[in-house]
Length: 409
Image (cartoon, rainbow, N blue to C red; front, side, top):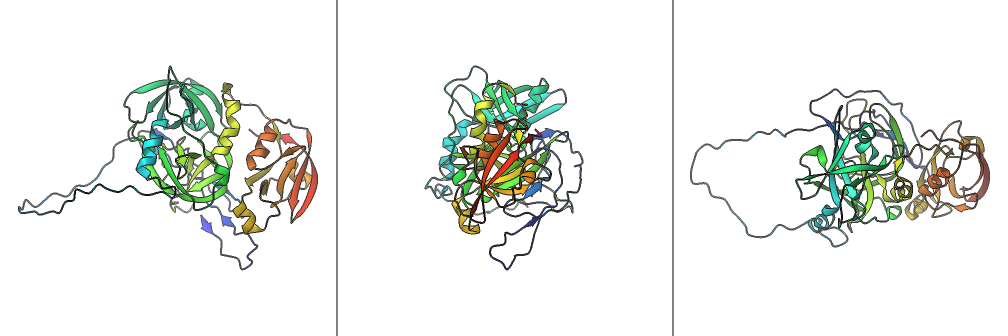
């Protein structure tokens, strides 16, 4: 990824050229190395948000090798020792990371899915005391083909059977339920719509599938908001919008695990990681998480059971939630709504005259306060319906008519 030079105009939004390839979801699957497919993605420049085609790392499940240096056999070695207890890293909330981990780890599980084709491993978060677990669709997709799902709770070595409850592959979200579970510790969702770039975050997950029940913990910050990425499992791909970008280390096996704020609340689900770009350069510390606000908007449909395959009305925009920080940075007329980062060619939005940087604040009689508001509205509409879209453009409120297309999901 190459950053474009800075512009002298302070009102001009920086653009990014994207030169990444598509590979697989970041879930440990293969016991032996395989070559990564490479297909060069054309460079694009966009304002506000931008679309990235992600090279997601394929993982290897296995041991770790190292080199140990031997001593020379001499005696008389003197070392200094201390009895002081190590101090935990402090978060802005006043919590130490060890305290946060102790509080949240009981709500994190390792997930293993076995099919005739192989094994997938990932992470999940307990939503309810009765064993309802949230994870990524790409982690448990094998269950649709008859695969068996088991989970291992943090601090345990025993795997427990689980069944698929609901799956939404287009948004990469799924629910499973641990069989005969009760009195489990559930996670707490935070306010992802209130995030700012620079906020502290902690990621917990079954990184590299090293040892089920002993999750890996990493720390970082929110690196960016409103990212759009395209990720592939090798047989299909999905474009996910309005993602959180973080520099906390996200590795294969972290998929489905929590991205936590400084209070230990879940503000995202770790989903994707950038790997190698088209020129062979390795991307560093670029991971992505689905915001908790997006996940909460999908739970009512997922809990009803069965795969979610319904197609719905489609506007054809990529959007991100307007925040006070964005309003201040770009001089937006409002501090709420969904700002349009991309208008897809030939879609209902393009035909209606919606433009990049428009802020959608209302559709028909529904007020739009976040990007998820647009998605939720479209999920309840059918192709062919005409809707009235109210947008702010350069400070003026404009009314547009759009006849919805059919969603590509």
